[in-house]
Length: 139
Length: 158
Image (cartoon, rainbow over the protein chains, first blue to last red):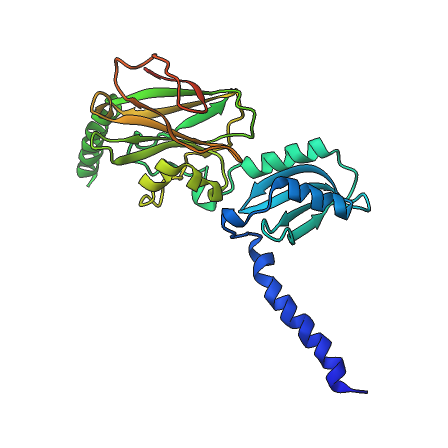
């Protein structure tokens, strides 16, 4: 058995894996706007891959697409806006209706989740009468 | 031993009373246009007579990564580590109205303070200080339109 031949592909995989890590860890892209490909290019690339897109938007400086892949599985992917290579890709189980899924995602995205916000805490702003809290409602 | 405690409590009560008497309940209503996009992030805050940041009344929208799009508020309040404490809620959909009610010190009214509302919507243009109105007794109840996303803004004083 040739040890060098056995180890070399493993080392290559490890190196590639390490190089890919920052992208996966942050899920964020940092490409100057001049180098961005158009939305049309994203749609063309998706069609070539057999993806059926239900949504295409920009998030964290990446293109974010949502839809079904060539096997009909629901997925969400972030794409590098210059190369259109996937930065992250997630598949979902079940046959959840896409509109309901989007609504749920939207509610999740827009609900307060900043730990610094601490909604239960009393406001620290000196504007408010001590001991009082502002109340808000959306009508 | 009991007397000094009672005296202290009475004194504390007397000191607290004027503060209570001087607070005003303010209700700020921000009605959004039907701009045809996702829920808007809004920051409602005050600046003083010199244009310096005075405090945050409410921030609608919970993802911190989007706060940079509320550009004026984000810049002015950057030094306030507790700017979000107790004043955050969900984002506001197109065509909906955000009503914020707060007990504010009476001294803030007719003292050169201004109410600002910054607005931002995903994949749409940011609108820092979409509206900016003086906090005055005379201005209460008068509706005004904003620059981009705000159909109508008004405040009521009690």
